[in-house]
Image 1 (cartoon, rainbow, N blue to C red):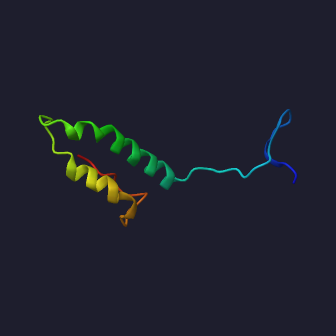
Image 2 (spheres, rainbow, N blue to C red; image 1 turned 90 degrees about the horizontal axis):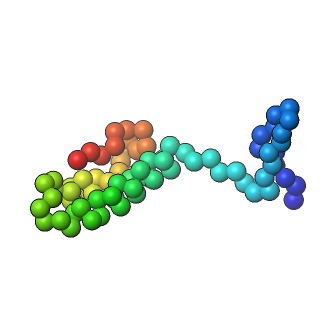
Length: 77
């Protein structure tokens, strides 16, 4: 198996033996969603936190299945 040329300039050539994966908008949105769930994991356990985060976290969980994903509005608190 040969190398795949990824980028070639007059002075450099970048090659790869594997398949180049370019993240999509959907990948970026899932990464954001996962980080929001992690960020709110501990906050949801605090009894005196001023915002009920459970509805927000449910919206985060269902966000990838929404009709507007990945180009719509992100869930908000």
